[in-house]
Image 1 (cartoon, rainbow, N blue to C red):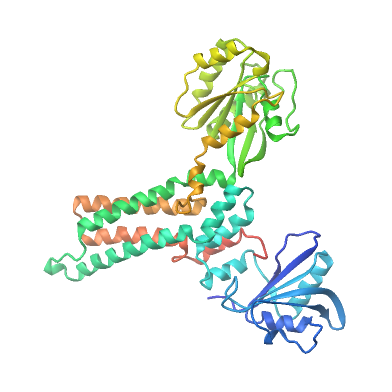
Image 2 (tube, rainbow, N blue to C red; image 1 turned 135 degrees about the vertical axis):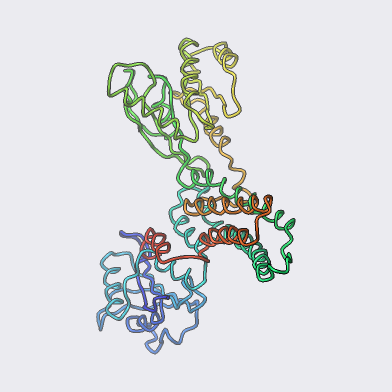
Length: 466
């Protein structure tokens, strides 16, 4: 059941700004506004005004003027929540915001809970659950890539795929269950060949969506990049060059970095989380040894590893360092960075190119971190290692939500059981059960199947006012 009370909240971020917006939604939103809003034309009532209009006036508590405001009026069902909605744009003073909010509460509104405006939009059929979750992702987006993914999902790109899949499955499960009513007559309404083709296609589509989560998750949260290498090869200098800031301590003393240092940089619309690690070497220092162990952990957790090799050192040393790091890499992209290229001649660079045979997941670039030479080439290489071409396709859906990924994984297992069942000739009742289970997990994503517990877990993470 949808709560029929009228809710209100400040929808702009906390703090002082030019303006702030206070939002009301519910059956009494317009009536409550009429009790506190006075237009220069004192005979004007908000209840008589058309939808999608703006009105200038004052908010008053009795005869006391609190502020001059602009009121935006939206009528059900053509509003964000599907209810009557009023948005009051006032000056950004925290005192004014609180005074107006307290006045609205005294007139019969109540404070909105976290995400309650978006929850009402979902409950009123203005959007499905995956679109509602995309609202939070859109607000939290920190890069062009994460913004594009959230916007595509909010506009229903993900939902349409799932609704289509559920519809096709429903048609077949209905025919199979109809067969059960005529079990004694040995009839077959659902063509098993067509069902096999459908289940195969759906398994491929669900698999593609589930597999896209790896890319979507790192884009949403920032692509983790570990900077690794021996001591004093220039890891901290490189981090500072990438960030264009003195974030990490740089010293000629070996082992200066004993713990991991993290920071985020946006490269052409994509967020990368750079992790500067302790230098890899043999040491008796317990603290430094702990830092080196964390380096290997960060290498395993990273999507991309930048291995810095000092071109001024003996090739035997950096080749051994490369082999050590390779042992800790599993399918991640490895970028081998020859540093201090400004201090050696071209022959040293050519020798490294000859000495190192690159695997499919490896690239190489030569830079001077201290002088900032070729840093742009390194940034371009970082972008190339991420499959961003999928972001350019409006039709290609990329999953970014862990809840969706879990449901897709369960749906995939269910449809695989359908495929196995068709191949092994199992009876229609078992096929029907597996198909309905697949439909159930797809429905969990869009909210066609939902519980108060699921909704509570989702919307409690929203900000109040959205």
